[in-house]
Image (tube, rainbow, N blue to C red; front, side):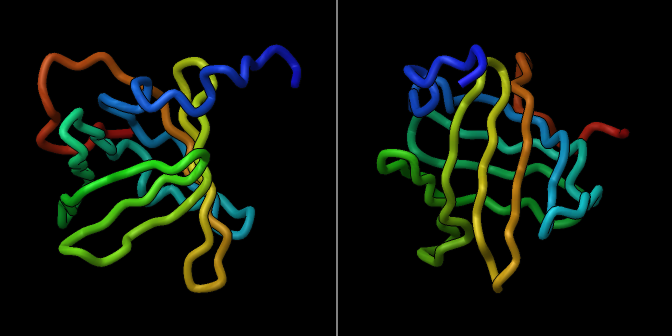
Length: 118
């Protein structure tokens, strides 16, 4: 396990906050379209994604190592998640594509209005 404590890998309390997208892989290939966007997980079980264009909002829940995001009652994402220090990794399959999202936790004073420019 090379130095990663699995004790905190699925600590829901650590999921709350601001996560900046560092990298998205689609079937192993880097997709830079999401880089700089923020995924915000609130304590009340709601989330918001701040990116160029639309900014989806909805609810989130976890069950063991699964993270479920729903928008207007429809599943947006259902994937395996883990936290490694200040990094979050979500792995999911959508429309037969394997997705891997890599995030870094950010300590922000308030919710960002726009994604960070890269």
